[in-house]
Image 1: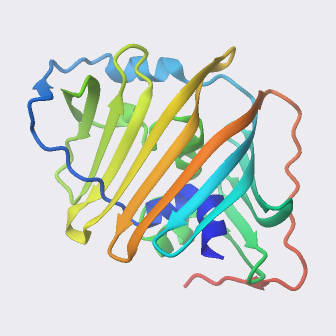
Image 2: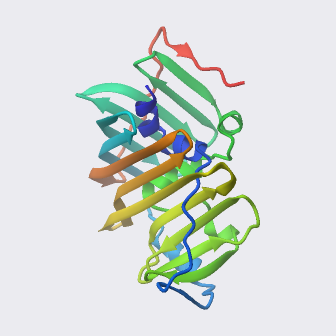
Amino acid sequence: MKKYIAILLVTILMISCKSKAVAVQNSNTETAAKIDNKTVEKHYENKLDFSTLYIKASAKYEDEKQSQNVTAEIKIEKDKQILVSIRFLGITMAKALITTTTVSYYEKIKGSYYEGDFTSLSKWLGTELDYNKVQNLLVGEALDDLRKGKYTQTIVENLIRLEDEKETNLKKTFFLEPEKYLLQKEQISQAAENIQLEIKYSDNKVFNQGTLPTSIEINAIQPKGKTDINLNYNTISFNEELSFPYSVPSGYKKIIIK
């Protein structure tokens, strides 16, 4: 069951690991750079302009005990709702509907479902979660709004590295390529828990609506082991009329978060 929910709610699962990225050490490949106040502004010039987005993707989940290949259908109504369906051999194994205020999902193997808001889910996961983080991950934008933070800027292996200046156990680092300022990867770290998360974006394609990465690689390490998730977008279409059907099959058991 976990592997389907992991792929289905990839952001929720990975961020719930309170993940930590390996800190980038000083080396000959890293040189100090002047802080460019326009770096973040240029990054957001790449923001996709769309009303709806349809994605059909191949997805692979792998941990130290198992691996699974499935297909994922992702429908996004920008800033309103996201519907994700996970299928194996053409059979729907899990489905999730995420809105700006609610998160709902069900999975077939154990016949369970969850319905709630981001407040209760964030408390359960131990980290702040919202709709924007899920949407941003799927379209290649930084999980956090970079315009609201303060960052130390350096050049690392020809990438612009923005490192959160907040003096907390939770560290966030974002890497942008220097030509179009597209996000290449982001890292979230909590050293005390010795767990880590890294999200990499590649295979960018240019559409009339903007540039979209078509390959997302997510690597998470925690004391219980390592989890890898790869999403490859095979079919992409913008601004079509989409339906968002979601209903929990009868007889499923509700998951209660205390």
